[in-house]
Each structure stands twice: as C-alpha cells, then as structure tokens.
Image (cartoon, rainbow, N blue to C red; front, side, top):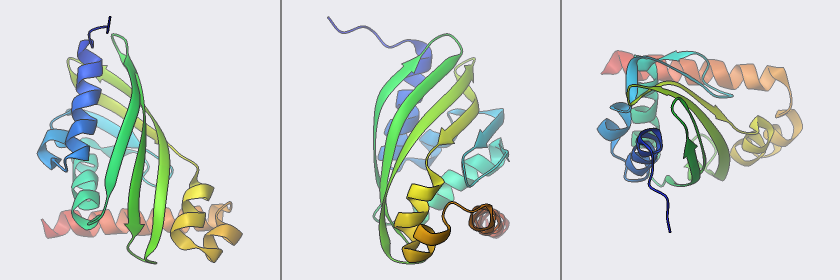
Amino acid sequence: MKQEMNTNETVINHFYTSFKNKDIKGMQDCYASNAVFNDPVFINLSAIQVRSMWEMLIKSGKDMRIDFTDVHADKQIGTASWQAFYTFSVTGNKVVNKVKASFIIDNGKIISHTDDFSFYQWAKQALGLPGLLLGWSPFLRNKIRKKAAENLRLYMAAK
C-alpha cells in the first residue's frame, strides 16, 4: 500500500512537476517571500532572485527537460534528487546534471533551497576541454559564478 504524501512532500512534488512542465509561476509560487537559494553556481539568492533565476533558465533552456525522484520530507526538512538534460548555450555541449536538493519548508512554502551537484562534472560536460582541465579550480568556478550572477542581474533589469 502506497503511503500518502505529507504536506511538504506535496510542495516539493509540485515544485518539480511545475519545473518539468516549464510552469514558471507554479515554481515561483512554491517559495516564501524570505526564501534563500544556493547551489555551486548561484550563491545566496533572495526569493526575488531565485524566482527570476528559474524563469531565466527555463526560458533560455529551449531543449531542457528534467526528471525527479526520491522526494522525502518531514515537518520542516525535505530532499529530492533530480536531473537536468539540456544543451549549454555557450558551447552547444549536451549536459546531464545530477542534483541533490535539500529544502526547509515552513507553512507550505520553501524558505531554504540548496542544490548540490559536482561542479567539476558539470564543467567537463558544459565546457569540454577547459572544464576538464580547470573545472576543479576555484578560478573557473568563480568565473562561472560571476558570469551567472551578471546574467541574472541583466535578466532582472530587462524585466
């Protein structure tokens, strides 16, 4: 007999189902107004920034698709595994990014969302030889972070 999803598992499932369906508003609505987001590229994004980040990534990721599994949550903390399949626009390289997500949820909204993935594995796929040679280095990681932050800033300014 399958166990019923609890409220926080429902929030996480809704988030990833919206992501899978490229339902930007559905994803954005999962975040509380005081939410924070972190991953190896985007650091300490506010709720407004993370909502814009997902919008930017979905709109620019023409061939992007995602799968998600292993959604678990208790009264406050949740986790999920997901994979993104897309073409990295800068190089045209195909990427399969395997991500472990963790959440803190309060009153049915995500207040903290952290995605963890291997930056080195991502860099090797997305950047090819430069990623293979330098993907481990703080230099390349910081360069990618700065470029991503600037792209997000410009995207938000244009809205």
